[in-house]
Length: 137
Image 1 (cartoon, rainbow, N blue to C red):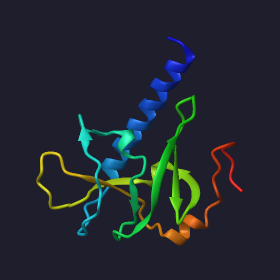
Image 2: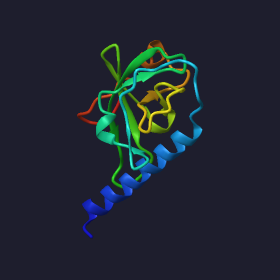
Image 3: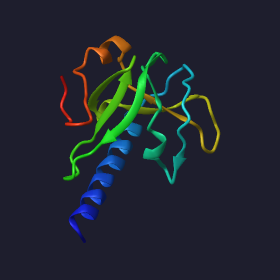
Image 4: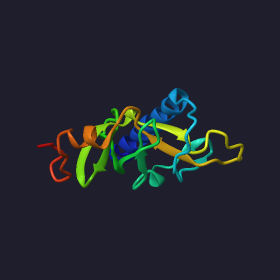
């Protein structure tokens, strides 16, 4: 197996393991979120995460998930988000995935991206992220 495929397999394994952790840790809320993510074989698709709204645990929109970055060694992924137009990054493990409607009994309910305790101001206060060199200001 070539290095690029092996790195992709390892990175994908780490990402889906993080989803399992996030799903197991997420609590049920009483508020309704505006998510549009659905499960496929018990997992969320990464393609559905790009552009997803990030909510805090109070249901307030605090930013937009732009990308998930992963190292070629399969290390912990990073989330890249936009808060009022400012790009920031933080550990992907900070995000949780909750049913958009906790009372839903649908076979395939929508899920939302939640960053507990986050505010737009807190995200904007993080160092600015740049794609060109992966460093922050």
